[in-house]
Image (cartoon, rainbow, N blue to C red):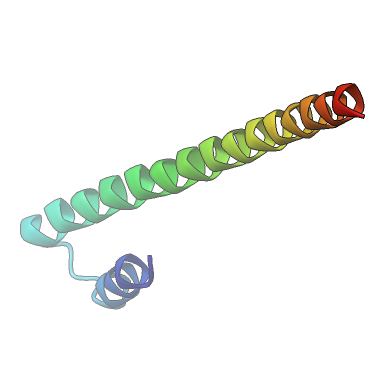
Length: 72
């Protein structure tokens, strides 16, 4: 993440519109967008997984309690 931002900041300092620079700009923009999408997607999936695990844990604990009650 930091490397990508550093690349962008270094590239934005040079404002010479050469074809090579334009291509590089496009590439950096694409990489940055895809990286942000990846980070967002992973964050969302991680949150969903955490919530599901939490629900499963609650169910598991409830079943355990039921079993304990049956044993007693």
